[in-house]
Image (cartoon, rainbow over all chains, first blue to last red; front, side, top):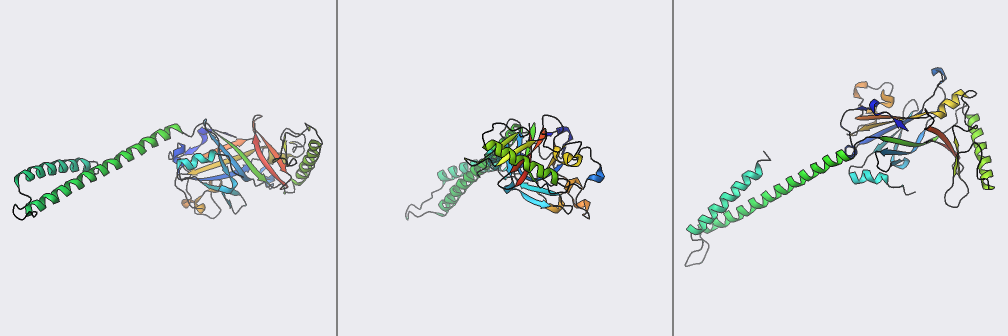
Length: 101
Length: 236
């Protein structure tokens, strides 16, 4: 999936992987209706994230899996997920290892 | 203040050592007759022990400072090495196609996947409209993937609402350097109805990822026969 860094909002506290030690991540995934009137928005698809693979530069992808996330449901049925990064760099780098399933 | 402490301790150590050396030459630390340690001798022993403690304390402080410097250096290097640049995301998400608008699509995708699996098990090496399949170990095919360019995918003209829901997806990642409580999290960037907006905490970093807008990044739907569930994922 593509992202446009110029549109990121940032406080400056997180600029590198090192800053993610002990950090918290919230994830929202939503289908984007294209060319559909707002009044037709009753169609509901609530994606339940199973795996995210975050690739940073040349590093091997960081896998965040369902079992490591906490699921929260908003009052409007929106589902979002919470993930806590390890407090150590080794713990963060371990996310690049394949899951043992 | 802490930076000056080692210097102060160093001078105290030098002064003590010099003073004790001079004292050792000038005083008798044992009584010549009784061979017992004199009062001056006791002070000398106290001075030597104090001097030793100063040296140990000085060494300990220097070790701690060096460790801190090494950690800061590592931090700076690591920070520079792993900047959050050139970030890409792949996402696999389960979806329930149980909305009435999506039910005909769901039934068609299941029927398509079932036919495709039968064909593949019979030896076909390609099934039109199917872009992938998977299996675990030696078990029969357990997953069939249908890509957005397949004729079985929801049609943008005939099924506009279903099509729109399965062709593009946004994933937003919100990072907090210092964790917050869940009720402080601004869902959709706005928060829950009725929440005190002043209590919401803005993320330290927010990234939006999109897929489905160009031909290089499209969504696909996979049907898993073991779990009878659909999964949506992006593919190149």
